[in-house]
Image: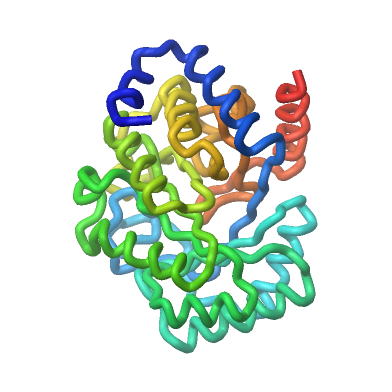
Length: 305
């Protein structure tokens, strides 16, 4: 599908887009829904100036700040993730890079979780060298998460302390090290639909495996605190276009789904999503896991017709 054909999708009605995306989801990825749970293993005090993020030291938010948690705490969090029905567990840290000592602690935790808990392991640790990514892979890491956030054109509007290319470099290093890659971003930052299409096309070119789509939650104290909330219709349209472009990739609904999609979360799955974060987000509470598991069953019934 060329760019002209993709742009023509914007002229379709929402029901037409949803039907097209759902057919592609059915044909290319089937009816499996991947559930992930994340742990904020190191919070706040980040030197990066991402305008949407509560953990940036550039913004006056009331986010909790703490250093890297201990291996035992990561192990306990992984057990809880498995108990609530997650298929994957993601260790997430604030900051652009970690020290060698911190990477070693996380590698040890990944190894122990893999052996004792038996849940698929992911990590989101910022900028990372190929050598350290290989170390994590040898410890049992299966997938590395590193969002591109938005289009290359719009990226400087949301962060200036690192570049879009910095993120692409880490994604390529992760793929070169033999890891799967999870990379997506945030919609509702003030970008256009064309920016979202560019973002999807970039992720397709990078051949990432999983694409989490967050919907901006405007956090008090950040430069985005007064950003207008994205409409449910616009969010659903975006999910559909991502599925049409990315075809056989995992597309996950993440933060913001509760406040924007509200009672229409199942519609995101009819529009092509086949994954979801459960158990809360980095600095924002999510729904109770039981509610999300009920949603999964509801979606599967809808898919079966």
